Image (cartoon, rainbow, N blue to C red; front, side):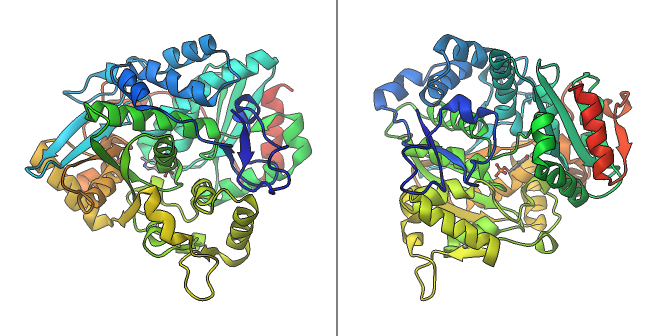
Length: 492
Ligand SMILES: *Cc1c(COP(=O)(O)O)cnc(C)c1O
């Protein structure tokens, strides 16, 4: 399996391809594009039938081996077996089996044959769906670095979910260190405790005396110093990482196969979306031949994606126009994985994709509506890819959290509430609608308290997490100090 950049010039595309292991540890392609397979591997009906009863780990192996053809199969099998265990994904709710890794729960069954189903993706160590991919990435990184006798220092900024998922994936892994910046005293007590209570010697929490934007500027400043990056082997694990996307493809197959008994049955997915990483994996599953009917992107008040799927206009927002909402992991003004879908939508034309995303930088967006003066008319093809969308607000979240608690006795988190609100607008006769549950309610307790007047239940082991000893350093917004800290602690 070869990979190509979404911005590769037609003349260079054939000669510039790379294998899975070449792109595993990196982020963007050298030309600023994102990697995709030169063609999506296809699954047959027989394969789907054979996969229906596999364990999650075995299913992950079957799917991954189609993408990571340069990793020996026995190694890949060992990596998936080590990752997808009931010990890692143990934070289940009553009635869920941890061994299923992403258990389904039917919420509604209607006379017209439609159903509303929740697929739990947040039973991992940090109680959010990012663990689904990040835990595999930790094992893949350790494996690849050992093979090359190399080291990697992961450096990033977080305001919550990504940073903690990365730290829990990389803790104790050989050859990897994590340096994570977060705004000092700005995260919730729960999120802070989750990250700072890690005592592993390869995890470095840096509490910055500033806001999240300062932290991101520091990351940019360090990343722009190419010599420093090379010397100290600095890398990232952001949501454009290809291995993360592939790992996410697996749970669409798991969801479909668990919800059906034959491949004639129709299933749609609604996905609480921000950076378009999660739903991009659904798009890839569909392109591989998984019989997904609709892929519904649910946004919060930050509705960049909903706007595109309603109008064909992609208009990114400035930070001042980005709202801080009660589903904060979707407060995204520019969807970093969206370019992967646009590349497919414009017929895998790298020159066209490059021009469109250069226009995002220069003009803040592009328009594929086909109206006079637009940049193209491919919006009319979007339906062929199954995409739909909808938007949810703070008031919708509160209503949905209350409804679901009243009707089914379960407490959902704010992001999942956005998903359920939008899913209900897209339920069709005869089709099962699966909503991806992207976090557990305990992570966003403030809003649960507002909606229900009581605290969200915490999974076992998290009861007194705020009381655990914390390990972190406080640092001023000073790039030189930061570089010094990294240099000293890498020992390179
Ligand atoms: C990251 C995240 C999302 C958004 O996922 P994308 O891949 O960025 O679209 C939604 N919900 C939660 C809880 C998240 O952590």
